[in-house]
Image (cartoon, rainbow, N blue to C red):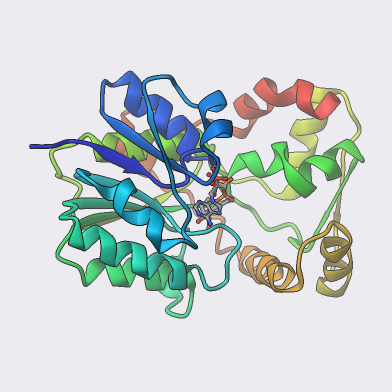
Length: 287
Ligand SMILES: NC(=O)c1ccc[n+]([C@@H]2O[C@H](COP(=O)([O-])OP(=O)(O)OC[C@H]3O[C@@H](n4cnc5c(N)ncnc54)[C@H](OP(=O)(O)O)[C@@H]3O)[C@@H](O)[C@H]2O)c1
């Protein structure tokens, strides 16, 4: 039986550590990317790299040829990510893919209109077996993009009130995905909510960053109107701004606060803490 695994989003926050972990475990990994030359520089030598674009269905067949299992990531930041994911899922079925591990998001099961829930449902209706991973917000949000810029400017301004979030290290999501992908399919038909081992509000999180980096970092809870101005000013397109504001609404409702034991249950070790993550990334925040 062919055991090749296709990783969609192989250069991404979860995809990159996932490819590394699978290669380390001796698996045959095909890494999908729009930019193979750039990917070659960041992925392990042993990973096969294939040109792939969710917007180009003509790239699907080569990516899926002789593939047994797929790690599926829908296009990030896309309100209609299901539109691009559905043709790929159809192609996966045509190619006889046996199992799909899909990267969804915390609480997807309660939001029927959410694109990632539509992707989950499409997969559930497929003859392929599946495992849904539903992670909370990644700690890595603070080491890139607008939140890294906010930390470096010493002020995190988001509409999160003082609601707790059980942030997860994306490397833990990757470790769970790897464990499921190399398993004997005992995880088939299951969905896992993945969180860190503790929940911190943004003021507590800013305090940890301040402590490890030595940089003053203030948290200011702002309202939705101000958040619209901040996010638009940071260059987010209008639909993305509304999507992010919607996420913060869920955060204020404490929907992102619960702590799940799934990382411990699946990996036999606790999820990484934000303090440990912060110590590793202090230099980046100082920079
Ligand atoms: N960020 C969070 O806190 C969070 C929390 C829960 C769930 N999620 C979900 O996790 C997934 C990853 O989110 P992320 O924010 O961490 O993103 P990310 O992994 O950093 O996203 C970048 C990746 O997306 C790939 N990509 C972008 N457009 C593509 C396209 N048209 N075709 C193929 N690949 C494409 C890129 O591949 P190339 O550039 O190499 O082509 C790159 O590997 C998303 O589905 C998101 O909804 C995120």
